[in-house]
Amino acid sequence: MHCFTKTMSQSGNKYIRSMSKINLLPKTIQEELRSKSLLKVISGLNNFELQSVKTISEAASLGGADLVDIACKPQLVETAIKISALPVCVSSVEPKLFIDSVKAGASLIEIGNYDTFYAQGITFSETKVLNLTKETRDLFPNTPLSVTVPHTIPIDKQVDLAIELVSEDVDIIQTEGGTTSTPYSLGVQGLLEKAVPTLAATYAIYEEFEKQSIHIPIMSASGLSQVTCPIAISCGASAVGVGSVVNKLDNLVAMIAVVRGLKESLKNSKISEKIS
Image (tube, rainbow, N blue to C red; front, side, top):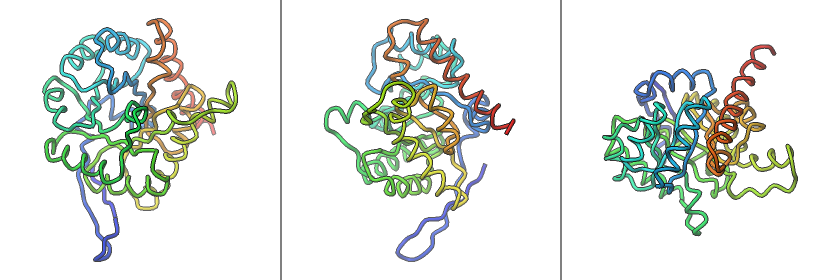
């Protein structure tokens, strides 16, 4: 799968040709990305509790999710693969931590899931994200890489950063925004309000990608629900990532039910699209 991207430099137009590593991901992931219905369940970048990761991984598998995203620790990777049989994504903001987790069987590495850092008053600039990306690519030139665009920067800058990340050989762009979005309403309206930042970023990045004929999957994550996952797909996402809507629940049965509902919402959105 080849892609051509176009960015601007001081010397004029610069065309960059890169080989996507999506084709190195498990076939199931490739198929779900193509059909724009991939569901990723996130346990949390700083969730190193073995039992918690076991439960979330099991719920993801039994509920019909396609990918589980866990903290970057080899033991957790091995456990998640054994429990769920799902492909595993590991998230970190320390590139060297990916090494042992990739050896343990992680299919995808991700710079992102910044939520816990925001709570500590730590944010990530465009320069910081680009430097982390370059360092990661140097360590893993042949491993599929996803990078989250921080929602703390203005949306036009998010778009610019996404373009830069593609030029750095990133395979999936992830958006975010729900953690600092405060809904003012209850019910469905509140769910829509919660998702607005990540939906807006998804649409803005997708629109620019379309203009520049960039064919890189976008994963919309953070603040999404059964109501808003289909909207993320309509905004241009090929995948959605959900965290707290699943991992904050206190029992396996409830988690499975939520994951199943999320996956069904994605399937139904594709059915509706075909009918229309």
